[in-house]
Length: 352
Image (cartoon, rainbow, N blue to C red; front, side, top):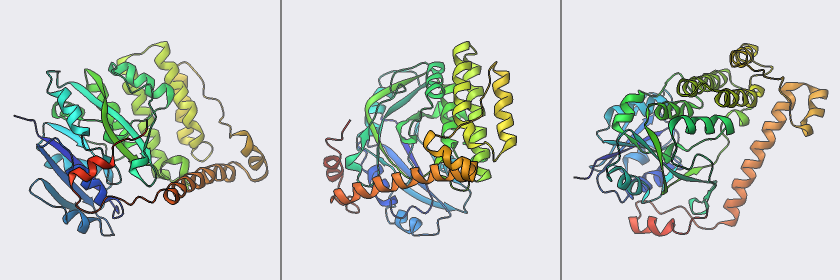
């Protein structure tokens, strides 16, 4: 019998995207699936829209706002599947995403193997997603995967993974104390528990680009800074537990140097921890420097103003790219409750 796959969707104030997201989940051509949506106390129409899609295999529940990780844990507690597919409410699965990975899963490989896939980014139109391979898009041993991630400061979309129940149980729940890079910490932990990563190139997901993360945070919110730091230190610990060598220590030092600018000078406590961790690794983190074109602002107005200007430019660039894509693409989002055939045809010819 085909294994049941649980597609888990945490949602918060996602009324603009939740319909297309659920359409893509329902359109998965792996027939034995359940879809669980957890509304995390949305203040818009997210819950009402999600409920309009409810069927025998799409369940919707709600809770008070507790954050994405708490919503994911709630969804996981309700899941019955032997494999877990995570899906953020603003992202999309290509119709055969799950099927390609499940065919590999059912080919006889050990359930301790973690399945990954390719993902593309888009601003407005999913059909214009661009797939840009990284060094993580390969079959890799856990230590090698974590080494490459930290050494090159890489990221894998949440949707790109398909995780067996065995690995899900071994990794444990999402860390609800994290509000930023919770996915980086969680999947590094899943990789740590795995026997290896199997990359399935044909298994594709689409991720909406937006203005998120520390690089776009004007206020450098302390909660987010704490979360980012905790995630970084956890991932360093996971890598070194698998391989403590000159190359992995070098990768950890590179990562600390890259991220130190987000803690300096606003959070001397976190920056001091970065420095002390670097010292324990046998290296040094140098005082961060802004890009050359922003250093004159630093001299005139100080670090904080110059960093805000740099982040502001990134925000404007991202918004401009999204507006340009929207203006040059007259194809609308898929109609509500469209057929699976419409979804399949929509995602043919995605560019790589």
